Length: 209
Image (cartoon, rainbow, N blue to C red; front, side, top):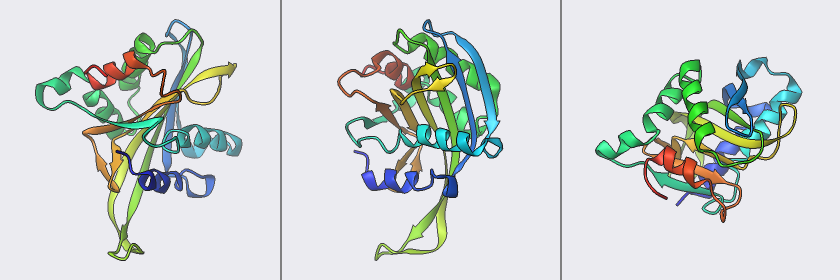
């Protein structure tokens, strides 16, 4: 189960004043799942209006209804993990989204597995959060416990030319569990919990869901 307070702690770092993101990358896909253009930008180079729009996209994933729209899933252990996208996602995170070759593979997999009849966008965000230490009384104290590096993915229908709407699917990887990184877990977002992206989820996890 996802701890709602962990997600709220993260989203407080997803504002223009307290931005935790270093890079945003993505692709615009046609209705058949082929990319029609990609981008990869340092977050600091975005204009103020673009910063706000991008933060709203990214924040929508961890801020979603916890354990309803946003659910925790564990990758298989051992050999079974090779069937999942775990290694690719970890490499994307470790590169800080700077490796366009890895991103191209990711876009291709999404395009093959994402079920839609509309054009859509894939936005990926790379962020780092210097997790502050909490005392036994719950109060913040000086120093940090770890630096949590993560990626957020938001997949949205296009409402206009290169204008993403509200995300319909996405994820947070690695998961933020008990205020710490857990790369064996991914938090997956489906806007409609009764109509989930089964094919893409199974591709990500390497197991039936």
